[in-house]
Amino acid sequence: MAVALRLDYHGALAALHGLEGQGMKLGLERTEALLTALGEPHRGLRGVLVAGTNGKGSVCALVDAMARAAGLRTVLLTKPHLVSWCERIEVGGHPVTEQRFADLVATVLEAASGEATDATGPPTVFEVVTAAGILAAHNAAPDLVICEVGLGGRLDSTNVLDLGVAVVTGIALDHRDQLGGDIAGIAAEKAAIIKPGNDVVTGADGVALEVIAAAAAGLGARSLAAVGSALPWRGEDLGRDGVAVDIDDPPLRLATPLIGGFQQRNLAVAAQTVRALRGRGIAIDAAASVRGAAAVRWPGRMQWIDGAPSLLIDGCHNTEAVAAMVAAALPLCAGHRTVAVFGAMADKDIGAMLEALRPLPEEVVFTRPASPRAVAPEDLAWMWGAGASSAPDVAAALATARARAGAGGVVVACGSLYIAGEALEAAGLLAAGGLSGRD
Image (cartoon, rainbow, N blue to C red; front, top):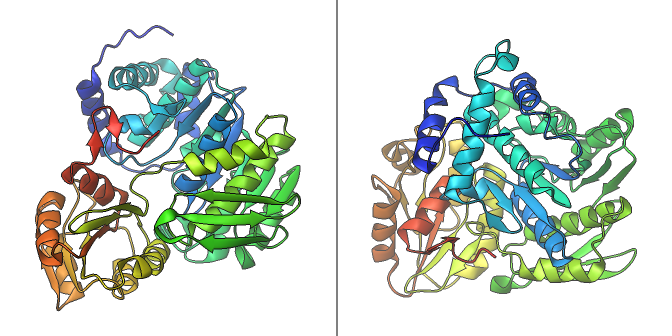
């Protein structure tokens, strides 16, 4: 489709900013109308749709790296971004260029102005970017699309996709206002990404697994692989070198540089996802899985940077993720004065997140990322009490935390992927072409 509306990257961001007044509107009707106007680019794509409370991005990155290690051409669609909107659409392991991103947004916005979308009303920012990613995947004609679901699953705009394999990484309490206040209800929302004939992989257990298994059976899934129960694995924490897992039937050992004990389950889920893809005729052998796991890079997720002081950056954005980060960080930071930089979005369970953080730092410098949804740092400092201070932005908070940690200490920047991205930027850890460490 020719692009009649011309935008550069800054113009595309301005156009997206202009849609922010639409807020969050759950439902598939606007995305479906957009894709119809674009010629249904979502039809015929195959790959993996990944939902879950935590671990979605890591599983997506691992599967993408394994597929590329097998020589496959991939499109990876993730959210949110750390620094650039271009990160949300990667082709062959590289974010699209700024002009390519602008062209995709322009094409989608032009479709949104046509008669086909009149009945549904204007799309949201997330719906436009979702449609742009799907259009990019259609145009790239990849062997595999790996797409991270946003909020929930049932009413998330990515749920227009039927890629063949549906993954639910795990379930925890998050986004209760939109998804419900109990594990079973949240699991049902996320399990709704399953389509008839899909192969389903999940790392969930307990009542969440029961809900997902029932949904898979009711929707006519082809198979269900429950990693950790029906499919056992053994994990090993390698400290700053990452994690390793051993999987049975057939035996396979994989290691990845992704840090944190929680990455063991993500690695096991990713490996089983690749096995499900192989069962659908997609050629990713065990050797490629091993190579891809070893080569993966996923900045802003338990990313350790040696220095004076050292820096640990993690985009943990809910209570379970903060608790997992703290458990992984405690042995890494042992014996070093630890100061945290923390900021979070107002729709989170802030009190519980702070309680999960308390075992780690001696002091916390609270701040806010450049988001209107962020909690005021002064409010966070008041909730924390003794040992808290505030800074107006992430760069200032990072400078303060470094001074207080001292050369032999550790600064932990966490609480949101927005904090992680801005910390990477403030620390000067960005390469000219994008995020340093990204392959």
